[in-house]
Amino acid sequence: MKKELIFNTDLHFEHENWNRELLFWEDELISFQNRLDELVLRWTAREVLTEVEKFQNHIIVHREAIVSIKNQIELHETNMADHYKRDEDVLNKDLVSKHELLRYKIEIQRNLFNEFKGNFFRFLTKYL
Image (cartoon, rainbow, N blue to C red; front, top):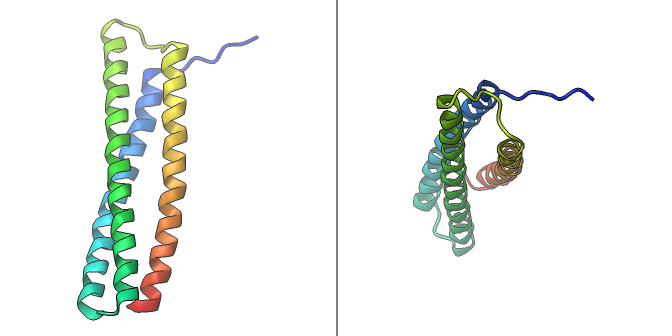
């Protein structure tokens, strides 16, 4: 049975891609908050303001998730750097498992974020 080697550089490349994606999400959240601020100025109806508040809460949750994922990526990068300093370019099974778990978390967050965006744009279409 052939074993597949996983190198720090491969995982680092994926981390860089994730960080760029997270930065993009952060920028989008700023834009979404700006749209909500516009709605508050245009609408006084309680039902609209209630929806605005729900979306603001979602924005907070997504920001917190982004910070958490960024922290996890940074921890993993630090761990990889420690291996590199010891001339260990191939990671052990435990570290790769942690990376795969982080990949899964990113995928879940990506799906949640895309669902949020869809709902947000439908809401904007209705009230802007």
